[in-house]
Image (tube, rainbow, N blue to C red; front, side, top):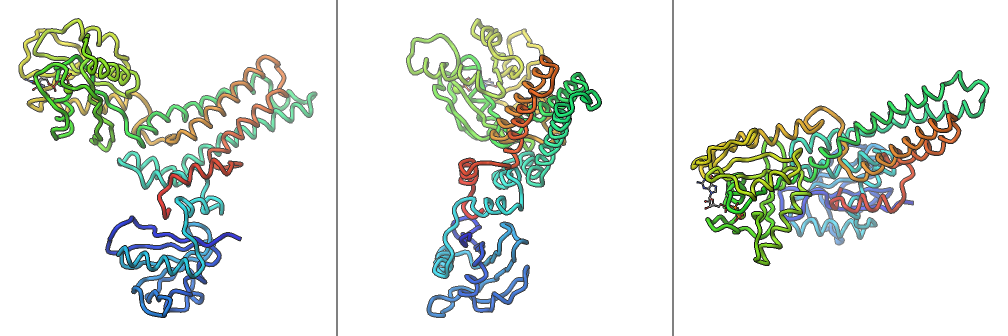
Length: 446
Ligand SMILES: Nc1nc2c(ncn2[C@@H]2O[C@H](COP(=O)(O)OP(=O)(O)OP(=O)(O)O)[C@@H](O)[C@H]2O)c(=O)[nH]1
Ligand SMILES: [Mg+2]
């Protein structure tokens, strides 16, 4: 028998109204013990005005109480929700009454875990709940909302169906080898499987954008000393975050700030200017700048238009990974260099010139890079990405076996392994450990 659990579902602190959820087989009985009205007689999905009573029958608060009977509730269990005044003391006292009446405190994510276990949603949908709550941009919210509504689950289910059908053909041709050719030739099978792998890869490739939506994309300001990296950081943020001086080598450490524009969410990173130096602190800063060059999702390589390109500039231009770099020509307000770099965005961090063009260039780069911004199902969770990657691996082994042996029977175990991996995404045969690692990251009360 499941225990009955309860928690405040609204944020901590004071507010006008707070909500408390009680869920489990005794939810109605618990509600009846603490409420002024006959909770056990209330119809499902009805709201009732009354009082929460203390142990001695005194009134603790005037509330609205909502009854939702199983299975028509978030968790799929009997649920009672209490909307009380949002004072800390009131919430505490009501919770104490609820615990005294037979419920225990819900753990983080426990309501959603029960919703999953009771079949109200699959695992990918349950994971989306927290993403919807945590979404920091409209795009992130849209992707999480799609996942919550089951778009990803449907896609995974369609892969599963194709694999199952395929495995059935393979098994039939193993069981009835003489008629095997009637089901499918090995060439046809390879072709089918290739098509499926292609579609799975397509979904796999959306992970970069999906991850970006959730975590924010790292946007790194890189360049030689004194070119205006920190000035640009401040200009983009609209505040004096980083120290700016005319001394080369001002920034020593990595600075990181949240940046939002055009419904997108970035981690903007300022770095130490890269040059040869004997100074130990600066050397360490430069080492970190170089590390960022590798790790960042997108690089703005800043060049100084008030002087000619130096050896250092040219070396950096050659070193940065081209596919993720945008050249930025700064200090165009005092431009003296006759050179121009094709494709570079011309700005002045000091005069705030060209910032819109720079933002547009960043957006364009993202759009060009992938499926981002299109109406597609995105893979946003590492757990899903890893399972899908393993599934693809198993399918590829199956293709190789088919091609080598020209006999399908060796492929069935690989196909089954691939099916197993896909199942993990939507929550078939997942272990307790996986579940607890997923749901423990949820907010308390969700
Ligand atoms: N005229 C002009 N000066 C600028 C512009 N941007 C930055 N500067 C000046 O250039 C100098 C260096 O700017 P910073 O932003 O500190 O440069 P940085 O690249 O962060 O330098 P390090 O941290 O030392 O690597 C400062 O004196 C800024 O005022 C610009 O657009 N126009
Ligand atoms: Mg700096």
